[in-house]
Image (cartoon, rainbow, N blue to C red; front, side):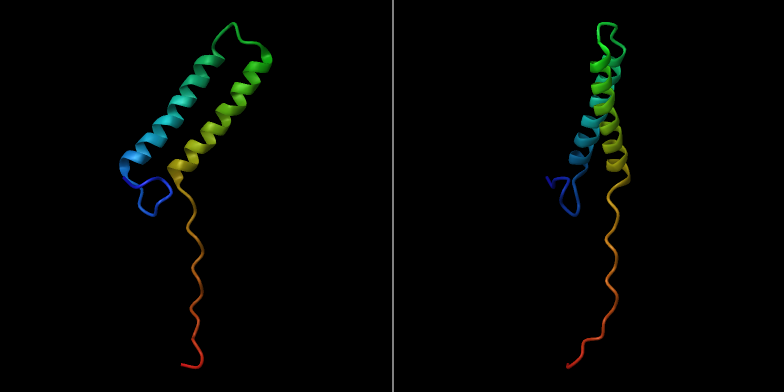
Length: 77
């Protein structure tokens, strides 16, 4: 199985990563709805929830492609 950092990641690795992000977001939403949570806990969960949401969006979009190198003529050959 190719991991997420390989050039061609396997579909199961991608599903596992996206599922983890979605579970973290769901867990954060459920904790934020808890009445026994104080303000500092809500802020901390909200902060980590935003990080998880940004990571999910970046995982769905994918990293940007590197810029193409300009074509160069090789001298001396």
